[in-house]
Image (cartoon, rainbow, N blue to C red; front, side):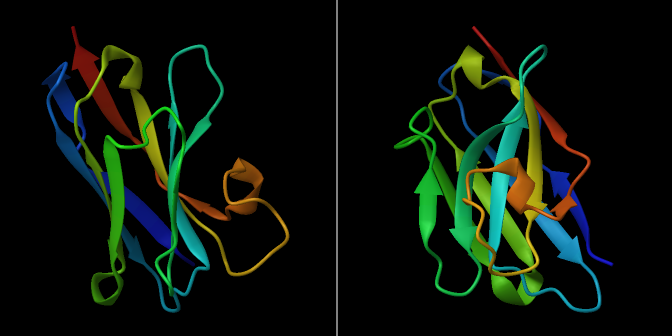
Length: 126
């Protein structure tokens, strides 16, 4: 069984930066992709960024492109989300997700992912 745990959330002023981390544990961990999603109060969970575990392909939501960077450390089974130029509308619970391998579901869809972390709160004040 794979477990994901996020860390690094907190309260930051608009324009500031935060770095989230997601550590995976489990006997065999070999995802196809790992992603970050977020959910604001009263809204659906939405895609933020994804990275290919082997080749490192990256894809971002338009709303964060140029401000957020996703990266990974394979030996540590950890994925990061560096968030800069934060805006109040970035306020949400941020979730890490991992799939079990290749499948015919878009990487931006929540239904692709088999494992989810409990989430970490990010609050951006104006």
